[in-house]
Length: 373
Ligand SMILES: C[S@@+](CC[C@H](N)C(=O)[O-])C[C@H]1O[C@@H](n2cnc3c(N)ncnc32)[C@H](O)[C@@H]1O
Image (cartoon, rainbow, N blue to C red):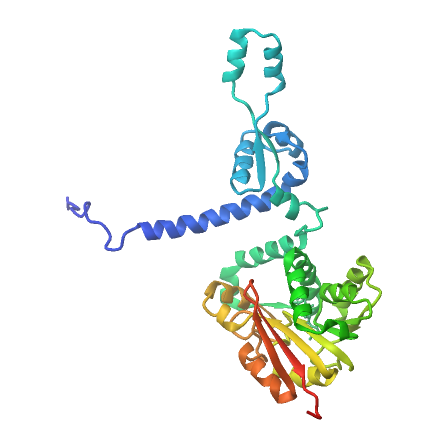
């Protein structure tokens, strides 16, 4: 028999790196499945008031052996709080004041109580004003797309229809914006624009319209318009109604084909897929009054280029009429954001401020120069 004598040989490259890579990715997957399952089972809705694992298992129709482990894992993620309380049985024992029995009670394992943490109460409960329900649904759809990675790798990106796609995305973006981005953006615009003199505003590709709504709430003299695709503006109207913004209206249209209107003092464009497309610049310039301001926010390429996983994700799906352009947030008809900003001057839009925002986006302010100057 041939003797294999290489048992004491080790790989040249230490195995730690390999196992850490695998362990880290699997831990991420497990944590994701834990959260997704908790939402699917209704754990957070059930734990608005504290429950012990046994009662929770009964209410949700789940396995009583698994539920305590499940709850502890959610505690570790910061999504549940746990606390120990003396159970009824132990209380009875204490009333009897029998030393022996009290000692027994002390030793008996106390089953902890679980309740939503501040984090889950703020973002995961349906009735919270900061609920991220649509954001979560969007993430679940994305994970389902990644589950089909082998198929997509073979047949290419999934084709997505613009109207229904954006109709979903804007609810998710509205939820995200409500958690700080909206407030920070509105403050930044007001610090950099003479807002008191703005009478007519266009929120280009405004989707949910929350930016236009917030501007219109602050400046009641303002007439604000949200320009977006017709199926999206149906939803925009619901947001306008929700916030009772009587000075905001919608303009349904396709900014690549339709006119934007005229006489605007401010054109605001945030994370707009046309926000790096040079053919839209002359349209924006002619929609503005002289002295009017164009504010545009995009994620510059340097903040996405070095993220291949994100770029792969971006390229897993595409629109029929406007194909993706390689790296994240780029389309075939767009140019790098710096190049786009450099072109604004060619159409009389003079850049007067560039601000890098904390979430990786850049806001650029340009004024339409007065022809007589
Ligand atoms: C990523 S969302 C941004 C929404 C919002 N501005 C924000 O920052 O939260 C892009 C928006 O542009 C709109 N949009 C995309 N293509 C468009 C087109 N050709 N004409 C008009 N709106 C368009 C989408 O419907 C969507 O509401």
